[in-house]
Length: 177
Image (cartoon, rainbow, N blue to C red; front, side, top):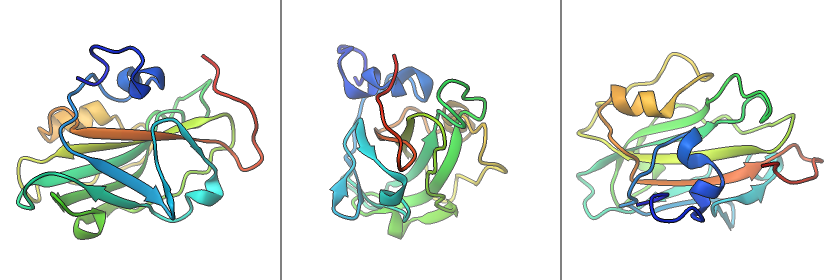
């Protein structure tokens, strides 16, 4: 279980477990890459590296299973005052297992992260759907709540998640605890 046994798991250390999702058991592989750089938990990416939507590959063992992917920023507009938490940057539904987002339905278009203050966590969360065409776009991007969204569409716990840190192009410094 992610976050259950180890307080050193990257999703716990990065406070993704807690701020965005509850503890969960990862059961499907999720690979996200921007160009030739693969996203690893806690890696640093600049806005110029994430302008275009990433390539996303989803594992699983059956293309008849469908998945929903969300990309959220729990630190919007700034980590010290995240009053837009969570900001929804992207949503793709009906992604067949063993494929990628190119085979799903983009229902919220990709909006590249452009943080202006502080270091933001950008979190990809993958859910397994109960069936096809069972998830719909929210009416807004700001104050999206991944937990509530999951409950509304009976998605249950995530099956995978990965995050990266992003700050303005000329930003320096580290995340404060």
